[in-house]
Length: 236
Image (cartoon, rainbow, N blue to C red):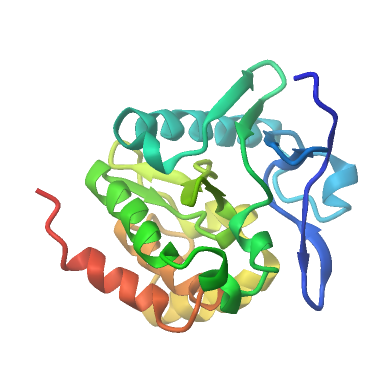
């Protein structure tokens, strides 16, 4: 791409500029019309808090991003950002955007989601219903995993996605995908749910855990409502 890019951060109240993602390096064009996921462990971006330092694991995450983006695109392209270019050699994927991500538009404050997009709840439910219909388990569901284009939520971050063709994983094997702050909530929830972090766990149970661990990133009760609606909606 010929555009000039800057590192992309979220400006979190009380914390300041924070990495937009723990796995890849996030970039944004100076005109804020193109977002780039760069599957590279950039020390300058991660600032000593690098999570995925194994190049083989980074490559695996890159392949999942591309694979499950295309799975979604075949059936539910309306829920995705449009890709403008893919650099397979350097592991960069470029997306067309209108502005910063959904969380950033809300000032990184869940209480502002309604003012950014009044029907975001219904739109997010439609996205998760699409995952369910396709048999996908997507665990990267932070509000920064969405952008708004023409008034519609568009999802990214498929690097932490599995389907039933994958072998079950242990939570310990993917701890590098999870921030230290989130782990503080995660471990008590794992105990409560009877999850052994060192044993393979059904994807459905990990999805339930993901919903619980992200509950505080959304307005009160939203994740419980989302789970209830998903369980009680026919997909056939």
